[in-house]
Length: 124
Image (cartoon, rainbow, N blue to C red):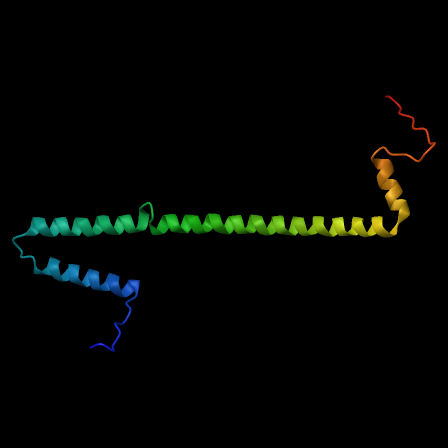
């Protein structure tokens, strides 16, 4: 039928279908093929173990999520610190624009002096 679309299946539905088909195939194996049943069950157990604990398994995904959450917290703290620095810089800029004494204090803190002034350095 040309006009009909296929329904998209979710990952859970696909996994259930695979599990069901494996269960049917294992069930169809006769009682005489016990070794084959054992091999199938071992393969299923190994596959399940690799899904949970493999390199790209669920456990490694959880540790990745935890690391990323810690990184987000660190970046949020850094953002707060940068915001405080920005406020301080804007406050200093406003002082330097409006207050001539602030300009003089900043210049003197950098070793500058007015014309004709003598600077004395004391050695300890």
